[in-house]
Amino acid sequence: GAGVSQSPSNKVTEKGKDVELRCDPISGHTALYWYRQRLGQGLEFLIYFQGNSAPDKSGLPSDRFSAERTGESVSTLTIQRTQQEDSAVYLCASRRQPNTEAFFGQGTRLTVV
Amino acid sequence: AQKVTQAQTEISVVEKEDVTLDCVYETRDTTYYLFWYKQPPSGELVFLIRRNSFDEQNEISGRYSWNFQKSTSSFNFTITASQVVDSAVYFCALSEPDMIYNQGGKLIFGQGTELSVKP
Image 1 (tube, each protein chain N blue to C red):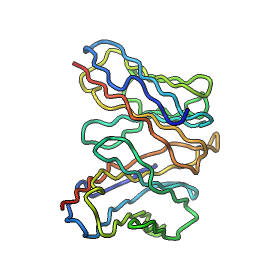
Image 2: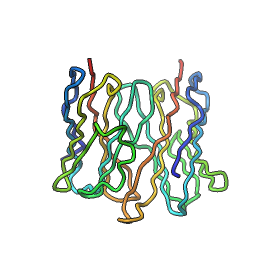
Image 3: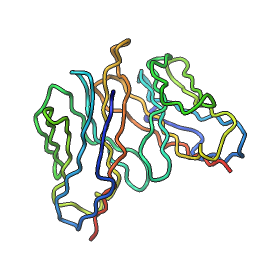
Image 4: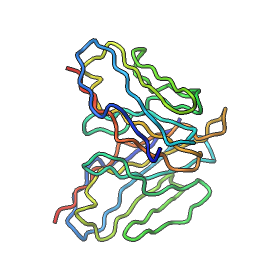
């Protein structure tokens, strides 16, 4: 596609429910990244994929968080048993080469009530 | 370990003033890449510049300029004659090649500097 696409753009969920966030990277981009941005804060690294493998998932906050990528394309970030502190904007980015810039999606704003 | 520090949390200037945003990084690698991004109030992240570790030449693009100093591990960003439209959060980022795949690697961001330009 023309850009990185994330869905849904907004998600309100009840505490304790599971949520799935989707990212469609730019076609041909082998690296894909997930970040969390709390209100007024910086970008917190969660996980990155090279192809369908995740060489670094050190940023996942707890075992309630997981992510997968298939077909070297779409990625899904799953948060189980959501908590209020999970409320944030979740950003996805992709890039083609190690020396190129990453392109970001518009993010999914998750609100846990 | 890989780390990016933007010590200035908030900066406020009056239009037409020059302003410099600081970025200090830590890395174990000799090959790495540095980036600056802008996040305006609308929220989308906009790429501004990239620099590889072997190119210390400073760069100027219009009112923007970047000063890369390997000796001090810094990659500072200066806006000349600032404008209200420059108001945004600016992020510095560092990428090290992945040792296993020799590919993109982890991309780490600093905490950001919020720039407010007042008329």
